[in-house]
Length: 227
Image 1: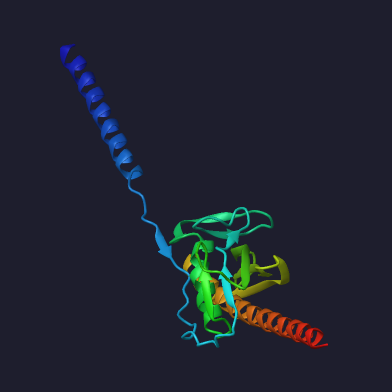
Image 2: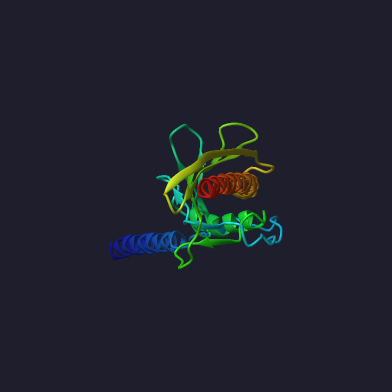
């Protein structure tokens, strides 16, 4: 009788010990998390800034904004329309809007159109101002190959009059060469590069039109004074 009771107690103790160890191992596994990978947008492909004449305008660049849902360092992918999802353990090193600011400066400076290109806040006084907004930067995986979709809206404003001289929406889609987060990052950099080249041309066009208009106004003023 005593031997039977002892055997039962022994089995219960062993079972309890096994359950305790199993629970402890599960707790240890649950605290082990995968470290995230961080990615950047870069401007290595832009050429060295060209020297502009002293008569060239100065461009003030406001920090870019981002539409709701896109002001985050998390890398966004889309499987269904209107539904934003995020890659786990893969992030931008900063928000795309903050990473975009120095890239815009590098792209516009490389055109040689402006005497200076200055990011606000700054004490500098500029002739023109550039406002930008990221409408979307997302990895769309509903088709094969998947692709990255980047849309940027831009406004050029005359600082003195606050008059909008022009606006444009740049939209670029780039197919990925390898599926997964890294393939999306590479395609995103290509899409951003293409859009910023177009943005630089847009700023140049706006500056030329602004300078031409001001020159014509000055000539008409001088002509009326002579009369």
